[in-house]
Image (cartoon, rainbow, N blue to C red; front, side, top):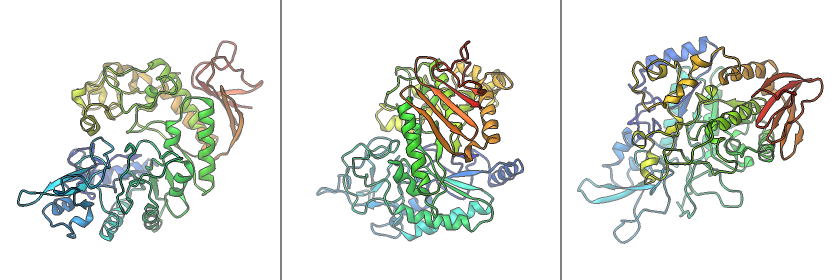
Length: 497
């Protein structure tokens, strides 16, 4: 289980603005509750990974509160990235960097005498000031935070914005769009705020801490880094264990695109002896049951809302099921985002007034952001808030059509998306697919086929049905085969023999 941030926070960015890294926000419980959760998970053979946010703190963090009244150049300010402004009056930001959420990445402070002061860097919201990882005190603080949670029994950390901790020393201007949710284009220089070589020394230190604890503890990088060879640097033997494969998440729904990204990913991680990861949805992107319902080649939207082009829900779910069965057959580690096992679509008609993602406001209401994939999932079709809580007041409103996706409508129902996931996960474990190897059988324009152990996996991306190899036993299919036993379009099958 990977838990997103549960620390004390003003919730400027869904908890990714951490005010205290060693406690639990009262919204979610107490440290005693966290200890109980970890113990209960372990008793069920589950491991718990917690989110760590080292690129920035909350502006409510005690360090930043101490920095604001402190003098320029003081030890308090040196924990963050404060700079004088440009221009005769210092009223221009120190450089042209833009926030990932929209608008400038710098905010000017006000001195104790009421006069404008220095500027501080925040690559995200104004309530998320970036830490200065050139300061040894920052290094020491996070080594202690790691030990705090490892001592409480957590099994590892998903590291937020793992590629952003170190900034280019001169804070040079960057004329390109400031986007974290897309990797660096191969033919362009690396942005001065992302994927700097200095991050790797940090993770070597962290790995030493994790390796000093008994059992298997894991570091997982959220690093939006391309090309795959560059991402593989994060999972060298003395650094992180895994890194999310966002190039795969972003790949188009076509046989050539899928073949290319799978091949690149496996070659890159094999070169450093690390497992490849596969992921289709997470809390930062439009759910793949909706994303795949847009025309192939559509630029991935940063949220979908009222008035936007709407996905084809039936097509999206059909492709999502096929994509999932393809993904779960690949060697390596697969990550599932809560609710995708129900086939949940994005909430594409979320009222704009209910939106909480700072992207919506900071982009001038041009980017709807991530709220649509963060709506609480439905457990019971006929319960208040579909079983999420005792009333209908869920923290983001749920769409009425979600009743049909509720767990109690799908459990033990043959052909449901939930049962498809259960079947695929059982077969994945039984056949050792995660620890297997991939052998390509077909990689044309319309069909993708490979072997992993004794299983043959085939996905039909084309319009024409595809025959199943003679004598093959069907173990799983993302949708029913045609009456003549052929594989229709947008369907993945697992075969034996």
